[in-house]
Length: 451
Image 1: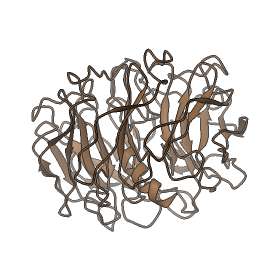
Image 2: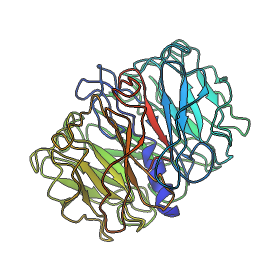
Image 3: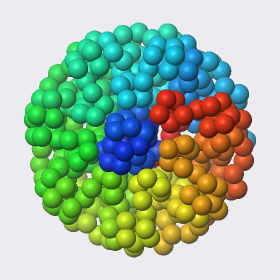
Image 4: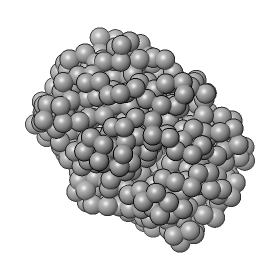
């Protein structure tokens, strides 16, 4: 799964960890597309990079839970039997009480900043971006102010105006900050000591003023479109999907209209109805667009010149009309469920989790009910209470479901046939009742997440 991971991780750098309950609050929701709980776009994110900067915490190849609770960041390490260890307070900061971090002000991400193969915390606080480096014992170092910008006070960055992502822009295997500010996209390169360079205006577009980009209309992602192992910007604007290719000096090329669809005007795509993702569907090492439109899931394949093919209806389901899927009820993810290095759709519908396997021609198989749980009716799962992620928990190179339910974190292991095992309570914490975790206060991420 190495080559798919590189694409998936880059694509994931755009997803946000789901938090804000106004529909259309975020450009791309991480637990994918979850509307969040407030009007904010909450970019809490499972982010990453190239080839795979979104690592696990202790470097053992199994996904770990990192939960930002009241008293700081807690970690539960993934075990080979697909359970998690009991939570340990890994650093007494980045929490609701410990540091006063707020979902609607202070995005928190996981990415490998210093290139040591372990996930680090990157938190955008009041005074800038803070980093806590991951340790082999599954804890984090105390926060260091890694760059005095991108913060609520330091630079005046706002969640509902200025998305901040992490990805490897220059191909050095360290996560870089890409911040979409007022005047365009700024980049701060990651250093081996876990800090970042000062921001540079990397392209004068994709910004609140520069181009008129809006969180509630224009999702912006980072993914490797042309297969050069550097993150590229893919922005869904009014007239379609624009691409700016990442350069070795950490800047981006000027935007090119890569496909005249998937836009606010070009196709009538809406954040609150039509999630758009990037993943390698056909296994060619380049990111493809997967858009959940009215009539189903559309795919535009990435080309080596950084553009996309015209949309093809890849499966006539998972859409606003085709199946009745709703952002506020039915999260849809992309991950490699069966281990064939192609992204598959995992949709959490009314009756459980459905899977459509990615095909080499860039289409998907018809949906199969892969496990009769984690659904709106099947289990009573709710976007505003119960985040659902996909990650390789046991290290078998197949995506597993990790669902944060009422009683804790449940796991269903991915099978080679594209289905999942029945849920097992993997740790009795991080839940709505078990621990009192709340989506609008306590982000829960998976280090090594495959979404």
